[in-house]
Image 1 (tube, rainbow, N blue to C red):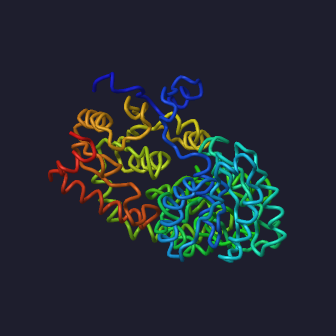
Image 2 (image 1 turned 60 degrees about the vertical axis):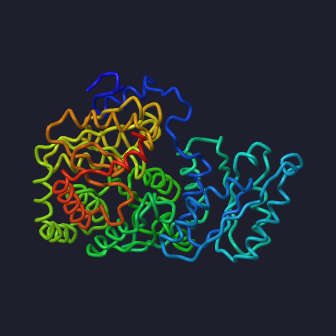
Image 3 (image 1 turned 90 degrees about the vertical axis):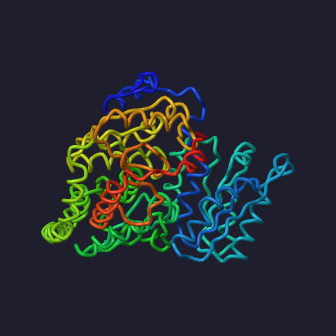
Length: 467
């Protein structure tokens, strides 16, 4: 491979060390291409059913999150369309203040939609003018039926991760103190958006199915389509467990510190070993280890043919894993562990330093668990933060694939690396977690290898990359 196409080639631990020492800082201001704090705060709160957001800002911010999150989120989780409202802030509001307008908007939202919860979100405009959104929420809560909360979520107020974490803190204000423990119940935490894009309902269904077989019930998925009532009683469950350690970690730590709810620290259940680890992480603290091991034994026996298929397809190969965009780099690292267990040599492509910086607790957690895969970061992705419609990053991935005789690409079908592919992006509408995931991945990889010689669409490539 041409050395000028590569900005880093080493292990995950070595990349983390460089990031901590400030050696890998991209020159472009928005090279990591993340959503802003306002978007990510909205993403969490959008996962609460019968919640009406009142965005204190202009129409543009409102339309963007409504079109990207609220409308598809409601459609995906099968609930009636829930509105996204705003104060339509204009020049007059900037000069004279918009708190009165915001209060009237909250009253109208309560009167018109009769929601269980109203959340006021500030955005950049109201953040600059300094309107007191918390004070308006306090006043409105005495006048309307719904619960009213406020969050300072202006985009310039923090990075994308702070939006998630501040929203989790606000959500905790809906929770009641830990009282009588709900025996046999847990929360699945760290979800957001409804669920859609980042946590598929099919994955959550598989986890719920597995838990039920062990004898564990789920109070709610926080905040992936949960209700205000589920949030209210959330501190009284026996245990919190995350569907993804990266997003569950902060919420779990916050709830443990405030309410004393124990938190099961496990990774994503990709493949047999990680699935067993996730299930036992829940079962052991609840005194259900013996039952869980018996369930896991039977489940593993049932997928033995699929596990053999996966081993046959991956053994002795190089797994090139690139999930730099949705569903995210932590999944890429989870897949690296799975492919290694199946006999492949995993190489994670394009794990951006910004991602490492913002997910440092999760990266360190994975390293402590012995996950330290080889990582390659290309020049184009490092500069751009995204590969969408980039002929440069496509050429870089092709270069990497050419270096290995028996490579298999695990990532997005938007790429055309010239080797067999396994589609592991959110475009797929079936479980990847647990034993159902093992069945699905076996079918996918078998199909990918069988049809690897079929030509890809030249027109599709021209549309994406212009060549």
